[in-house]
Image (tube, rainbow, N blue to C red; front, side, top):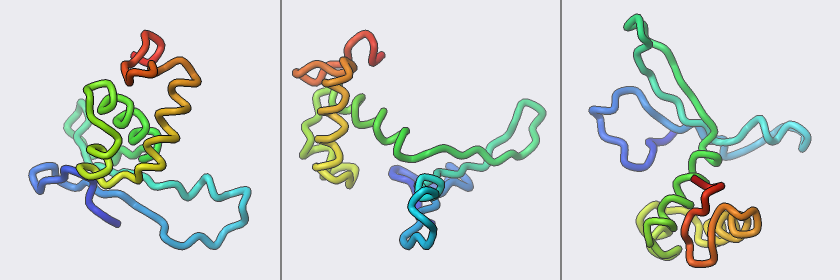
Length: 110
């Protein structure tokens, strides 16, 4: 377990579950992706756990940061995300028509 980027104690129970060693067959590796868990209140003020896939969230955040004008190096240094991973996300988004060559989100990316 590790704290998410930007975590402060006021956020309450929030953490990332990361598997550093995987001892499963290759067809089930996708089940062991990093997950972020957070304890929240529902509309009836009951505590519930919410969770989500970190990679999907990270991809969206990278595209938003690129759109805001941050360079790949700035994203790497500030958020600790591998520059190669940022490049792959950017290139795929351009290929899919989500991001322009000038790192601006296209209508389909909004």
